[in-house]
Image: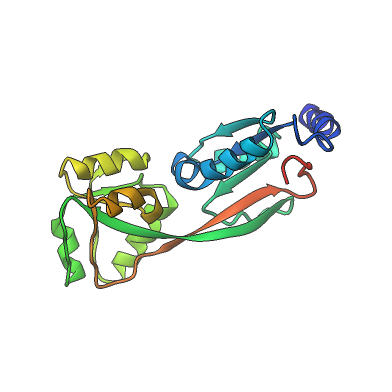
Length: 208
């Protein structure tokens, strides 16, 4: 009840005050870095007095709890949420790739079992989807290193510690500068759908 009152107070304060309102967004750090930050940069140029809070939570269940407790106004995540009071809007589709320190072509996907693979954490959607795909080829990939921070996985590749599974957009500069290379594979890797998630009927003018 208290959180509901807080929301009503926020709604009354912010709904017509887009120049000086406040907004709280939940978004994992890797999506924040390459997708959300450039959007916020533009908004801050248009409305410099607008206060923005970003909560970089990886666990989707915790993110939804924050949303339902009105601790964030909306979230940007790679999952479809099936709850009656939550709306999900698809934003874009993201490519996942493996990157390596030097050019690398894999002609037989079974070869990937022999390589040092650097993956996201076991419970993340990206890792689960990758392992499910490889199981169809009778491949049980084992991570030599796991980390939920994209920048750490990228740094490990730069130190020639293996190949890392990352969002392609997150390593765009490294690929252009030939610091890293996209691993050529004989199969198509899973894509991620990035979604905007919010409580039904509870977006203020500032949120929108």
